[in-house]
Length: 442
Ligand code: SAJ
Image (cartoon, rainbow, N blue to C red; front, side, top):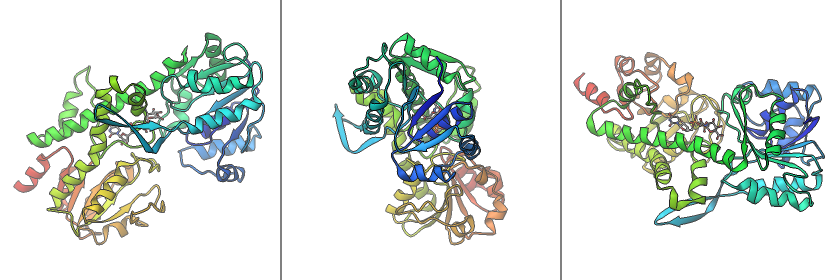
């Protein structure tokens, strides 16, 4: 199939890089977003999100004339839906005492409805948004069929998950394997033809529900793996073991790959997607549910560790380094670091936070420093919450000169114990009470 023009609905972290990449590969792309601010920003040639390399690709796409933006779809050969699928803030359900969240599919519904007036025979529609299993068949298909056209025979319909890693989106978009799930084999083939415009990784055709499940399985696998790492960190502390060392040694086994403990699991994928399984089959998902609970509990665990290190939290001044949900990204959504800061404050600590990727994020209830020096200058302790490269490169002696603090707590294994001890700090690390024993002995 040939695609001369496509319409991408949703210009966020996935939609915009995808739209721009299609455009730089010679396809006319109309990017559509319901948020007028996003449309205006892009029309001015500016960006509303940060992703390495994205500015250049969007500028190139706009300059070529292949990428245009609008708040309304138009007729096209293919329509891609890349809108958010968050949770309802205030709706929960319960199964055998396990309370779980419910997906808010309203953006997918609205985007699908917006396509209906423009849908023509022979078109392709692809859902990319992460969704509960059967969304393509049971939610998207019936809405599109209101056009009186039939999915699979009059138009093609696919689910194709995005699988790119924030911070690496542009490279992974091209290089990662693509799974294309069609409502019919012909639909999957049409999806294959579309993504072949730029995907260099393997393109694999399957059915729509398998593709939906694959996406959720990937992130759920990672969530459960991180949960076990977090539980190992708790166990290591109980047994006086350094969990980071223990994981490194366990991973020498050729069939073991344990991920890293940390202050919790954030972002808009791994902390969210497992709930789509729990929501659709609560009776089958006790493990997935409990892994989520372990990871959600982790910020509380970190706060207890900080409190132990400082002999209580009331009135303590803490410099919190990093608010992003993970290293070297500017995304503060669902960030465990932000939750740790809130919890510390609830316990009476005075926290100053420094986030180099978003110094002026203006987060409600968080005292953000304009620079590292400001965060450090009156601190009693330094808490490392995100493994930003900028932080791992800090020289402890240099830090010592900028702060009265002599206690550091590293929750992400970003720092070398010996270097901080040498610079006169007491050193604490999540999942590693050995550090404290060394401190006491030294
Ligand atoms: N984290 C840990 N320990 C680890 C790894 C991560 O605590 O060992 C934490 C991070 O700090 C972060 C969270 O988990 O808070 C999630 O980070 P991540 O790097 O694991 O994943 P995301 O959410 O940035 O991106 C994931 C990716 N999925 C997989 O690697 C299976 C990406 O490929 C997906 O496209 C993305 O979810 C998505 O959109 O679904």
